[in-house]
Amino acid sequence: MLELRNCCENCNKDLPAHSKEARICSFECTFCMDCVENLLQEVCPNCGGNFQPRPIRPATNLKNNNDLLTYPARKDPVYKPVDLEAHRLLIEKLRSGGHIQH
Image 1 (cartoon, one colour):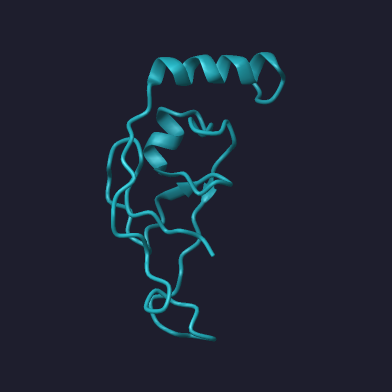
Image 2: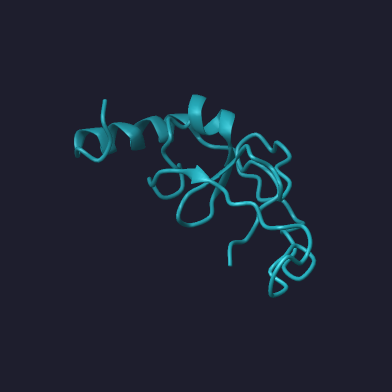
């Protein structure tokens, strides 16, 4: 089950469980669509992986109690602004190794 983080790790933008702007990597690092597209260039600053839209967990029980009432979103924020210079170097490293396209 995904840990639904409640804000962008970089800019602290509110990303409630129903947000269509939330993006996650395979480690569930959570960023807003704006930071992912405009600052991070689709590369997670924590692991170097890519991002996907975060799935939306139903607010109420639709089937088997797999909902926010049973499995609530995280309440405390994960806020750690990205070191943009370190991220630039990570992107260069990934590009030079052929992991991402120019």
